[in-house]
Length: 244
Image 1: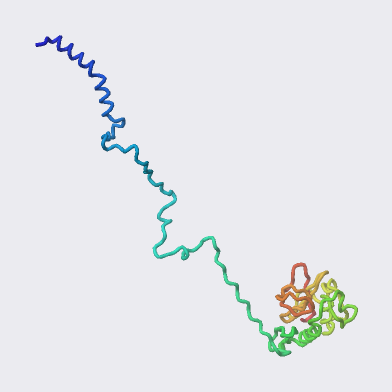
Image 2: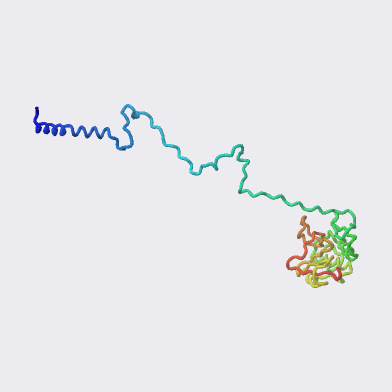
């Protein structure tokens, strides 16, 4: 039997000879990641096989339940928030078109020929004023018309208003618009109102406006015509015949 000293010497020599091989074996069989297992050589991938993309699909961070289509509802059925609702245009009131020279009531209406149907319920002087204006309705606009002579082939704004007032006995001679702004009584009248400034004048009587301007006229026509009332415009002075 070997002595104890000899046995110890043999063990040291064996460790010296087997040490590098044991370390190499340990490095081969111990994986770098302690939490993973070594893949046996018979299960390793074939180096000649094509590489497959195994990258997991990236999810859209904006995709959620709100983006899923509603059951039974198509995109065409969904409301569009950025398109304002179009409100229907209001229906304009129907204005009666009389066919007779006079009508009942106190409001005048324009006939098909452009002249005014005279309301029988209005005062006599008002009816005379409308009848006088009917005589020149349809005449073209003419600068200075109605001033040099009462009956003219055309009229300007003050010439037309002066003609109606003169023929009714409310005015003696034609006036320009600036003078009509100081004529009569102050303010708008109950039946007759003259709205004037230094540049323009028009007359409103029994719900109609005698004017050469196309303001407020849907047809945009110029000349002496009956038009819808517009009241006193900015910069105009309102006057009226006394008692009317």
